[in-house]
Image (cartoon, rainbow, N blue to C red; front, side):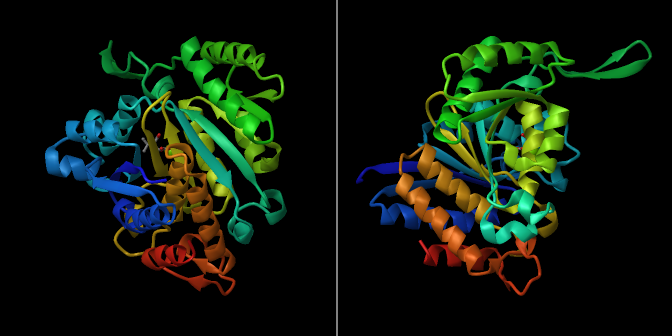
Length: 359
Ligand code: IPM
Ligand code: MG
């Protein structure tokens, strides 16, 4: 492969910049090994963008992201910006990117690397070989629904948000779910709250209709409260889960913890066509920022997803994932995944170097 790819890098806040440096080094090295040239540009989003420009998502950032082949993001947010009004918070930068780039499909795999079974809060036998994929709708639902706000009604203030999904929004995320289930173990579980919410009844009806195009996939439905319970009771019953924006936000954190650490989980956010965005599921961890403690593996694994889903370079993705697996098998651990059984404790930079050396 001789072509060149434009990668737009947004380190963001907190540990974002720290985990991004090793991830970019791994990305460059993997490109070289595959004979691909990368054009890497860096930009501002979140709190650092607020500090520099007054806005969490400067116009230039959205434009550059739109023009890129893929976007790699660290994280946004931190206590410094917590008191800003809702529309000016760092999180708005991320939400604006998702909306502006039409990134409606968020893929959050929860995959347990064998050597980390003891780092999970569940018994090792419950999580051994765990490999589930949560697909979260990312540009609709209650996160973006209108009307929203806080207003004065009679003698008190009332806060309100709107949970809304159209048939076409449900159908397109359902198709992503069925398509990906077909490439895995052909089981799709759609999670909703159809015993209470009209939106969920429509969701279920549309998912059932789309199912007729995928007769080889086994479809089940589950209420979200039960799904949360089943995820910690018997997580291996799931293959692919598809759900709305807020349920997916919550369930993906639960699923993440099954694998031992949020520090291990990558994610991909995809549009119908165009640029994809890749980011670790974890946040900006202000408490450990700047101390070389953060686990860079979630961001490094996000680079692997980028190669697989946006750049069509599966061999580069495999190479990165294998290098990460080797580091873990050899006993290297950042603090978040160290179970204390005589592992080789390393920091952010050293973990990055170890992955690089094993590509
Ligand atoms: C996530 C995060 C974001 C979300 C925040 C930072 C806006 O929790 O990506 O899961 O709620 O979507
Ligand atoms: Mg979240």
